[in-house]
Amino acid sequence: MSVGSSLGDQLTQKVSELKQVISGISDDQASKAQAEGGWCAKEVLSHLIGDEHSAIVERFKRFVEEDTPTIEVVRGVSAFDARRQQTPVPQLMETVESRYRTLAEFLSGLSDDQLGRKAHVPLLKESPLGEYPTLGQWAGFVINFHLNDHINQLRSLTA
Image (cartoon, rainbow, N blue to C red; front, top):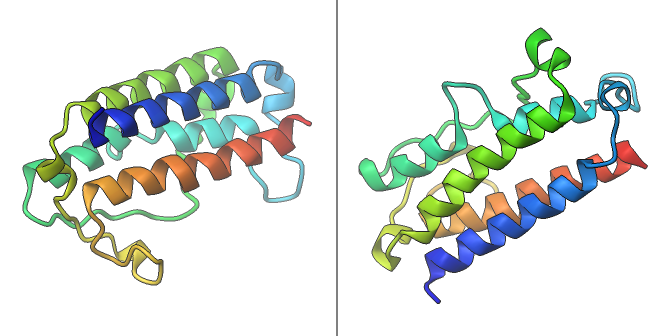
């Protein structure tokens, strides 16, 4: 199995875990934050969806299409708005699944050379990855840290 295929499989597994965590939540429960200023479950899902201008798949494609692109990531942006507040949880989850399925397919088709391409991600400057991660490292970060953190966040919101 190639590294790209393995990353695609890992991502698919994480999204399945996310779907399982969110499956029993009502729209009413998903609209309420547990703490003042905290995110509700719909806001977490909105964050994972992103907006039309910062779709996660497009960020990954830039590693391959551009020479060392700068990937701007702003921590704590959810893309939550009135429209998504009114969107049922299953529909939000379906959008998350669709976006990440596309990303898993993209990752699965990458060569080792493509996975080794770098981008400049200023947000990661102080992280162990540094501010110039490879596409493979970025994918591992998104799967094993970013998604995992939000799965745990949703677990606490649905408990």
